[in-house]
Length: 391
Length: 143
Figure 1: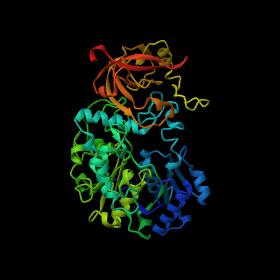
Figure 2: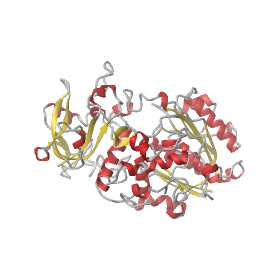
Figure 3: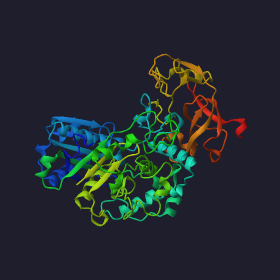
Figure 4: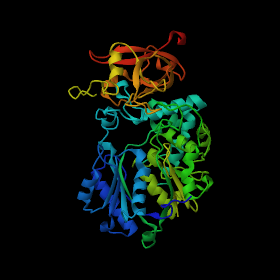
């Protein structure tokens, strides 16, 4: 059932800074480059922006009011999610809902991050997240030496391997495929092929996750501009429609880095994917899953790709590790995943590099990695949120 | 909490009004879990209400301390300098007989012997004069 947003809101511009490590620009410097690029892409002026939906902020950087002050924006709508990968969809949702309800006309979704200068915060002695009341929610527990989100992904993968007899060598198919995509993307930071052998020889970070199962730690910014479909028709680019959306799933059946009911933290144990309630995004978009030509997901750790594929029913519980073999998610595969290389091989821009890539694909601007006749792509994470984009 | 005057010290539990009785009991080498009097069920984490019935009649009860490893990891990367000398060290989630899962470390067994399903029981480690951590060791039946 199409909702009040489906087809009514479009992505009208994308922009990004350079991606890299230890870049000289400040976080807001990178963000300004991305914002300028997005405005030029859309054919809009800075003064057209009257809403902000931010996927950045304390403790990893600037908040909305400083951003508006520094960039000279005057806005009437603000949503801010902090720099936490899980909030890609909710950032887009707030932008789309603000436009659909008339609270804003043009909303800028901004993420800008200098992860290489914030390493102390990422599980190090400055790990405010883990030390707060109630702690962090990726399985961290600093008292017992667990201070990084990687620990949670490792807990989930270890359990998954035990339950289904999956191996690290099978998991390697994920980073190997994403590296193959990255080699077709001139903006990707990883420039050399990744082999199964190199994956297996790479150092263990937190068993069972090896170096190449963990995302890059990089600096960069992406800006995505949204406007109503009516407004989009008069702008420079071919509009990309938001066809369907669903929010983050949360509750005791969930652990952020696992499929539902895997048995991590307090999750019950049951094989439940795909759940009917997680298929809402297809219903809103008015399509079957089979119409999806490319899948984009939050790949901070390679197991998250497996879990996302299972949640949305591309394969059954415990089947994803085998399903992704033989190039199925790589270039030219049945279901290309994260065609820019993702967080594992392009850059870690909190998932927004993949949103920008979806827009390029739908405009037919993805060069040698173009999905033929791409017209329907899905963003969906292992924690259950999703956005379907169409053109 | 991280002790700001000793940035290289291992972090200690952050005591709140929700979890205080758990940590106080650990100092007495006793494992307590929060239970709902209405549901007759334990839950985790400790909180102001029962997550199953939203009731407020919760109480702390003594737990068996026995369970099985439900998942495990071995940390190889140094995230906290305070744990440098321990590398590589394990961390586990243990599903207790009461049904909840606690996070901790397993002692008394090489990391290579860790597996999902390994029976373990709680032991108490007085890490400072004021803090005691629950850890786990394989039960006699497991070794």
